[in-house]
Structures are given as C-alpha cells and as structure tokens.
Amino acid sequence: MPAEADTLRLGEALAAGAGNGLVLHLHGELGSGKTTVVRGLLHALGHAGRVKSPSYTLVEPYSLSRLNLYHFDFYRFNDQAEWLSSGFREYFNAESLCVVEWPERAGDLLAPPDLDLSLSYQDAGRAAALEAHSPPGEAWLAAALRRWRSC
View (cartoon, rainbow, N blue to C red):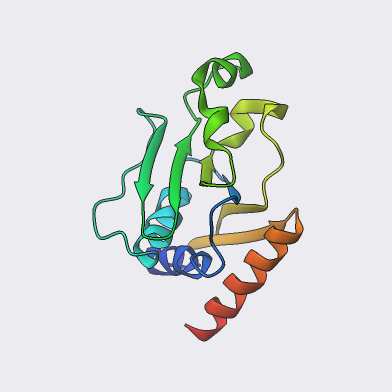
C-alpha cells in the first residue's frame, strides 16, 4: 500500500462484515498505519467525526447505528498486570466490536482475535497481511476481500 489513501481503503474494506462480537488485532511499528486503518473503518461504518489514537486514553468508544466499537491502544502498558487492572475485559463481549492496537502488550491474557492485521513498511509504502482465527473471522475476511476488490 503505497499511500495513506490505500491504508484508509483497507479500513473501509474491513467495514464489510464488521459486527458486534468480533475482535480485530492490529500489529505494526509506530506510524505503520494502525490508527489510519481504524479511521477508514469507522468512516465506512458511518462515523463522521474525528478519529484519534487512544494512546493516552487507552480506549475510544464509538456508538454507531448497528454496533458498539471500542478502539483500544495498549502501547503504554508496561506489563500484563495493567491489562488485568484496566477493567477492559468486560468490553470483549457479544455486544461489542473491539479493535486493539498493540495487543501483544496484554500478553496471553487476551483471547485470540477473530482477525489479525499486520502492517509493515515495505520500500516506499506499506504491506498488509490479514489472518483469520475463527469462523466469524473467516467470514469477515472474505467480506473485506470482496469489498477491497470491488473498490
């Protein structure tokens, strides 16, 4: 993905198939485009406002017409104990779509996601790799790929 527009487009494609009860983990170096993907996802789901990184707040909630999306950023976690004391476990339920930047900072306390997205720098642009870990994740990935190809 050579441009920010392509990273936004990837987020827009993920809106297809996104729904409550799903979890997406975002991996990549600082500045690799994780929040940009979330911005594209939220705008495609109908959020018209600003989308900011939850680096300091740790979570940004978004109530959209058909779902409750929680955008997490665990970059500032120093160890797994912070995940345990955060109270965030209750957000991961059938009524929420959870998108997590830096999930590795919570260690093995987070359940495997339905979908993993890894972003990396490649030459002058970025590369993205998606991997499903559940039947709902496979359906989400298939819907996102169909939308990506049609855009």
